[in-house]
Amino acid sequence: MDDEARGIDPGPARAQAPSSHRRWPPSVARHSGAPDRRTYAALDLGTNNCRLLVARPTADSFRVIDAFSRIIRLGEGVSLSGLLSEAAIARAVDALRVCRDKMLNRGVTRARLIATEACRAAANGAVFLARVRQDVGIDLEVVDRETEAMLAATGCTPLMDPRVSNVLLFDIGGGSSELVRLGRSAPAEGGPPVPKIRAWASLPVGVVTLAERHGGVTVDRALFETMVAEVAVFVQRFAAEHGGTEADMHMLGTSGTVTTICGVHLGLRRYDRRQVDGCWMNDGEVTTVLEQLLAMSYEERVANACIGRERADLVLAGCAILEAIRRTFPCARLRIADRGLREGMLVQMMRDDGVWHES
Image (cartoon, rainbow, N blue to C red; front, top):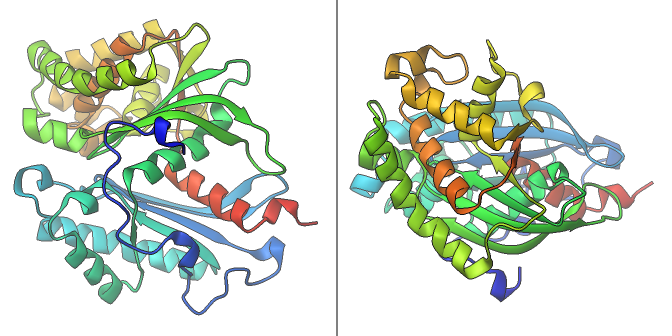
């Protein structure tokens, strides 16, 4: 990414070795096995979730053969105490053990295993990483914010409308949120399209940190507007530095917030990724769902099949981040992505290995 495309909060440099120097398992060579039997894994340990994808290359993409997702709230309380709590660490270690076993059972030959904002922010992040190495046997890579934005863009680029030349991608996370301005993607010599990143920024707000500051159980209109105003300061700074809405622009959102909004919009009785990933919503439809969620009590949010108890106290904080983005970048269309960092890691590893150039 060019220096002029850098955003308002690039974050610290990586504390660990680049992914190209990492192996899974350590004794297995990077190009182990026949090309059609290579098995890749991408693990994203975030502030709120632990997610894993295991996949094998296809002719021009990849096929997912296993997946795992669990809400662990690793970053719970970090914005207040500066530390990962023992309870949060235990939840994360348990989830990572499941991921390790899945990778071993599926014969993964190459993996990238990343951690994001909670480990960047916590004073005891290094202690946590050491415990994971000792107790689970995997080595997590703490990525910087630029890498996080780039991976999200790589994972979501296939959902860009090819007829437009301007897309605003946003990833609402637990401890931070990323904004990426994308131009028309470049064609690739095999594999998914390559993103053209025009500008990016990492905002120091996420659903967990915002809900901890303002509360997420009882959220009235006044509190919601307070959260929107807090986030808007960062979004407006990005717009001032990198331009506002353009005529042919659409938004592309990836996060639990937007997939939840889409699930509510579709009236799903049970969340279904096949119906959500790639779904288009117009501006009026998004507004309708936001108003519907604001009108719900905490108990009603818990009872909703697309929200549940694990997200009921976070979803309105996510909606406030989305609303700040929408007010700064008014767009007629929003495309929902149930994909992101993990898919970006898979594409990057497979492209680096040249799997789409081999016969």
